[in-house]
Length: 342
Ligand SMILES: [Zn+2]
Ligand SMILES: [Zn+2]
Image (cartoon, rainbow, N blue to C red; front, side, top):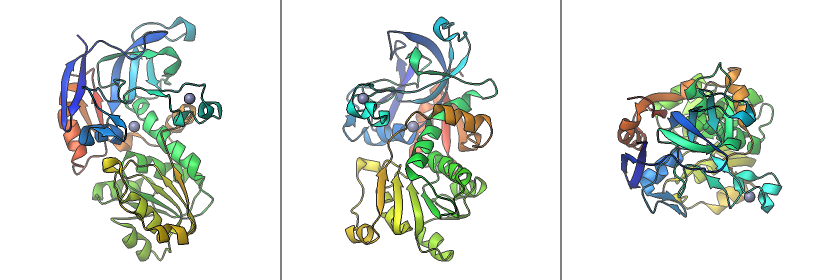
């Protein structure tokens, strides 16, 4: 029988059995190799849902994953055993937003690993052939699983449009913030101020390209004589994230909010702080068609996703993994679950 990890309710994730599902027509059966635990999976675990996407029945999370094909796919000349990533997003391709190329905003999207569609924390899945992305031989299964979160980083950078030598603040140095820092460095921007309350994350931020790091914005900006940043990218799970981003920006600055706040609500925001600065604010949701660039960045070594992976667990260790990740255990960045391992 195919086993999977089900979220039953708040802080309750358990192993159970499930038929390998998701897609029926034009699908391929895959063996799941690596699954990243995402901040959004943790919201289902900690809050029982995200906004209107509530868990009403036991639900299998997981949308950042790599897998191996269990048989040849003639139409795409892919062979059994091929390592693949799978785009978890199936937009309708017909609505106003899909037609404009904003597939990440499609209101009719089917997303693997968002309720009610079970995700990849399981041994086997049937996935749509059109969603399969072959991975070059030089890349590992863990790297392939990191392409989805890296895609989220690329989308945030696409929205942010960093300019040469401008100062940037990155709030939150989890996997998304740390990916964004690496992309910012490639962009040719100026000083990168990275903020995170956890020391091990700040250390890694520095290693991956941040020029200044600190526990909070005030400490970092004031200590370095910076009067707010031109660009602020928020990638925290904090309800204070929006206000912090405003505080970190300079007059005329731009904000990109990529994080999902705990409890689906931002703390009250001072209108004057944001208004008087005349800020431009963008909300970043998931990603566009970014897999080719994500693969190129990892395959060429321009972005290091291995540094972002701190822990591995077998599927049976999923409860421990989620508890550690939700408790923001010291030393943790990204956990990878390996359903093929005992
Ligand atoms: Zn994710
Ligand atoms: Zn659509």
